[in-house]
Amino acid sequence: MQLQHLVIDENGMAFDPTVGTSYQLGGSAQEIIDLLKEGKTKNEIVETLAQRHGADRSEIYIDVSDFLAKLRIYGLIR
Image 1 (tube, rainbow, N blue to C red):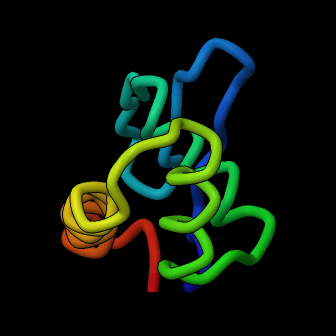
Image 2 (image 1 turned 180 degrees about the vertical axis):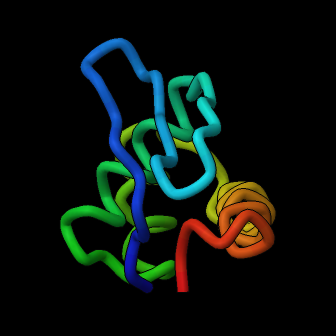
């Protein structure tokens, strides 16, 4: 997955300059975006978050999948 046209500041504000839209990213969203920037796959993101937070992988998988689907809908990843 490749992150498209998204500028993110240190406060978690994301800006899509192609359409002029801003988004406020929550903690997990910011973590997922950071991992996408590192070139991680969905499964690598799930594994990383599960290890960091000691959470159930199946729940994290669902949350990550939902978030990535939203990013695709908005044209922010491909």
